[in-house]
Length: 163
Length: 276
Image 1 (cartoon, one colour):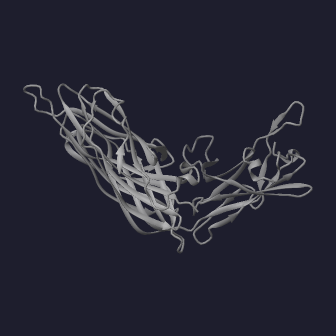
Image 2 (tube, rainbow over the protein chains, first blue to last red):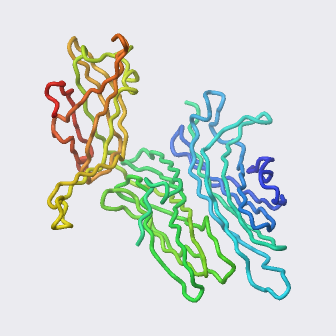
Image 3 (cartoon, chains in turn blue, cyan):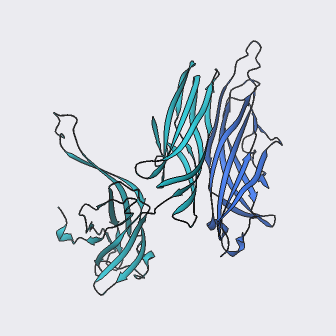
């Protein structure tokens, strides 16, 4: 159910969107009390970007449907009743090295997860979605190089059902 | 050993906390996620460096019953050399002021390499005795009375209650200097209070406040700051009400796991009695 918003990779022109963005499932849904739920989401994304020696900032939006027990967002403003705690880290790094003839060394790189935003709830396509924005900065020094970085996240979502 | 403090955004870029009351014996389920910023850089690929880091999450807890802790790299850089980036171990412990610290071991190699940030997520069940400092703030109603005086919200823009860590030390360095022996007091704000109730009698206003979960086992200074604007005066005039703690003139108080509740009342100081 986890998905990325359509504009995920559009903010950096050198980014090539690839279909291997592999969001994970909803895990370990726990009912903490009768009206308080915790859900855990795990996901991983793999953007590929191309050399140009520039520092790129990428804004990603992670989004998943709120098909959760007891969830009745129509009862009140859902944004007021949802909070989250997100850890995001790098789990896979790969670079293609320097293809300049005679040079078999690596390249200068920088991979950073910069920020994770607050939990948000939106209503789209006749359903409610939980989402948050995050930003990465990525740098790769060329020429003719390619890199791959796999940010992963664990998102614990807390919400209260309708009394 | 480096310390990275959640209160310093240059040391902990962000931290999100979830807490759910499990309803049994002060047990809570905590999820604490964040991004710590050691900004560690080395400049040789012939030697691997290792260091330990303590992340001070400032999350109050008295005892950890169960825990899982994951850490991961979140910002690394290398300048075209052999490299190693590692987060080798991590643990969560309760420190001496009953807050959760994360102890993390890092390793780094490269010419140059930088391990700028790592992320963490602690999922734990803890026992947490909620501490609270409360009291009332008293002044003559002739001095100041807002619109809707019976509602606590009417006072929130005029009164600011703050709990701060209090440290006092005598200057012992610079034996020849003029400051030798001088008492230096330092206060660091750690928790904000909230206005929770109001009582009115014909003479006085009594506002009730509370500070929830201030740090335990530390001397705290409670302060009440006010900024009041009287619009009935011509022209409208702003001034400050000054308050002093009743139990302790310095406004100092300490809460512990055994005694988690403290009381500190404040009285208005008339202008004629204020120190010059």
